[in-house]
Length: 135
Image 1 (tube, rainbow, N blue to C red):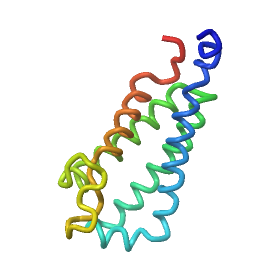
Image 2 (tube, rainbow, N blue to C red):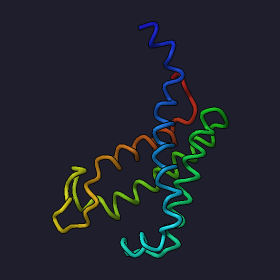
Image 3 (cartoon, helix red, strand yellow):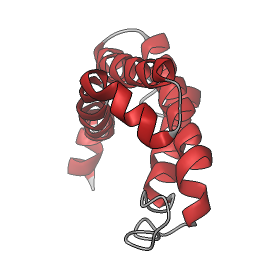
């Protein structure tokens, strides 16, 4: 177990990199197709631009927070939590828990909320925990 304890101060990078990759993939790719996403979701285009901006900035901040200020980690956590709770309640909640629920059944075809809930809880962890490593 001692070998694992030596790596524990760096384990946060596994979660940071995964979150950053997810949001830096999905955020910037929304900008060029914002109109189509807005139409598909029945939302104003400016909200899609806001969503894309929050995802992109959050992705950058979660990485920067790993080597920089605590506030960057906490702001990223807040941005991700807002995005994910919005996704849960606006899109995924109606399909229940199972991510595969709703696929091909004539519903919104966006799946249930299990993965969005996981991301939201991890985001809340970073919001409340910040950069603290050993406690």
